[in-house]
Figure 1 (cartoon, one colour):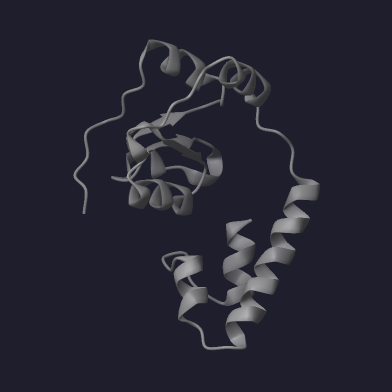
Figure 2 (cartoon, rainbow, N blue to C red):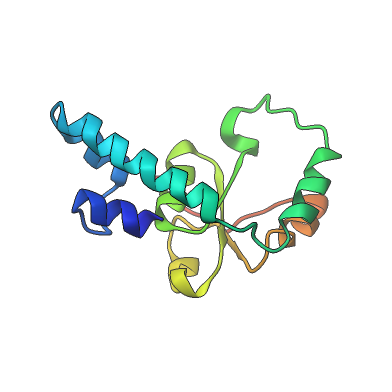
Length: 137
């Protein structure tokens, strides 16, 4: 989906999609947002649930989640560089859902932990989630 978004906007992979859109003048900004929304709507119709999603959601539904410490207890789970950047910038722990499409991202400084399936998180959450040490920018 992010590849399609970048193609629609004519930007390279190294450029953040939202930063690019916000840098555009009007009405180009509105046109870019409309294009992105269309891609997101199509993706929602076509996407399939990741393996382990049901098990992870079942586990999460049984837990009480208090977030008194702000983003310190938030985990961003994603499968792209954009997801890792968003989580990192928000101060959240980052978890990469590894795939053949994001090879090498496991070693990126913004990736805290890499998993193969979403339900891999269940054990991590039960045992106490820890990500690798990283320096904040």
